[in-house]
Length: 81
Image 1 (cartoon, one colour):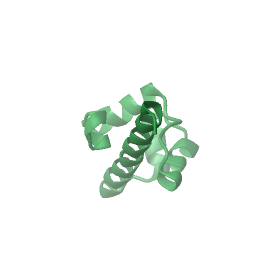
Image 2: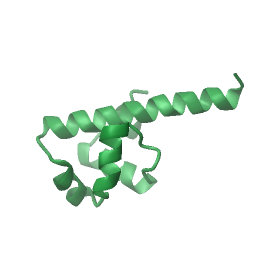
Image 3: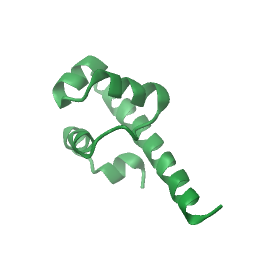
């Protein structure tokens, strides 16, 4: 495995951890996907993909920043880095 593949694998795991963390935090606060979408101006479909597929690669930097600000947690902490 070359270095590029290793980086891609690591990034995929970090994004998966981000999805799990966001879902867990959102559910702990009792916030529905619809309400979370409205609060952060992130499309519902994007949030559903995060929950179902555990894939955050389609999020923009602004959306990641909005999630980070909402929970008052650094993105790196959400990813478990």
